[in-house]
Image (tube, rainbow, N blue to C red):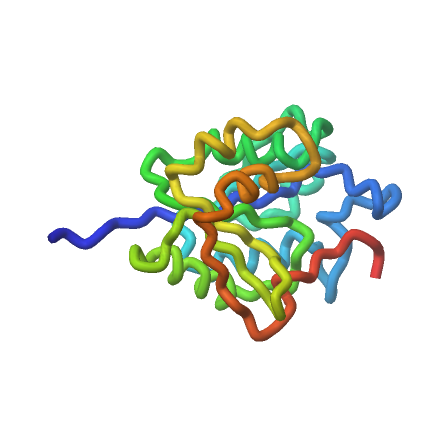
Length: 196
């Protein structure tokens, strides 16, 4: 029996207007000496993701300048970013490589997740005995990010209603397809919405 082939994509959400950060673009907010989005990108480039799609919108040019050039990285524009996070998810899924078997929805405001954390989740979704369709990291019972979806759920992601609730409706309607992966640290819970 031939070994199953996986193509796993990252969709980085970096299009939002950062209203809780005041006038400053959250993606460009300095964390330990470099823009927040750069922390996320530097970690992702070290992982086993096959492609990294960055969804831009608000202040697109400024954020694009903070994205490192790399063969796996592709920036796209969500013209409807002001209509909510789900529009960026839909935009990203529409641009996935045709061979994509799984995608991860990654928040651009979570700068403390390490490459090893992403790769642990990639390893789990690459195991056909464990992959139920949705993979969610947890810490002490709390659900975090990134969340991985298999290709049979891409149509549901493309059909999300426009809102700031992300993919929560897909998680609710497919709750029986979720596998949880426990982490021993809370970086998967740490997003930055306000100035440190």
